[in-house]
Length: 224
Image (tube, rainbow, N blue to C red):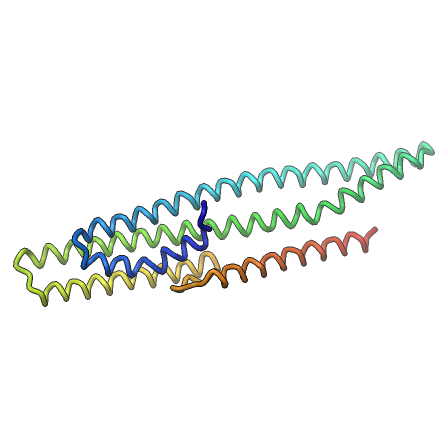
């Protein structure tokens, strides 16, 4: 996608309330509301597609990590056998390969951690977006009910009252989503979140990842 998931979800959060308020004044308010819901459904589909990719990467990374761990154990046995047979050169080659594997393990483990975090974040997006969709459907149902109750003879004052009711309902929907989004994903869902904040969070995540890699490498060096 040309737009990141975090930016897209943030845009939906920021625009959800205003879209519903504007829809009340629109010539086809229900059409506008339905379009907003379809956009949420599209976002959910894209998040789930990315979630599937993350799951596939987790499977491949876990397989690679298991294979390298098994290979490391096999090399230990082979090195011991080589020493017993007086082949120190072969034992040295086995140990050298072990060191290469050990240097890769922290990266593989870090990758597994990253993917687990990404999986949890995407699942939080799905949960929050589904909640947002339910709330917006309820807001649209309330709007339809208000229209039916008002009838064809509604006055300008009645129209204003319906607009206020729909606006309040939409704001409650957005506030509910904000709370769920914050709890599930750990990210702020406040309106007007800037791209700069997103970039800073990404940079912090990258710094933390690199720090984990360095710590793991230091542990391996200490044991060698």
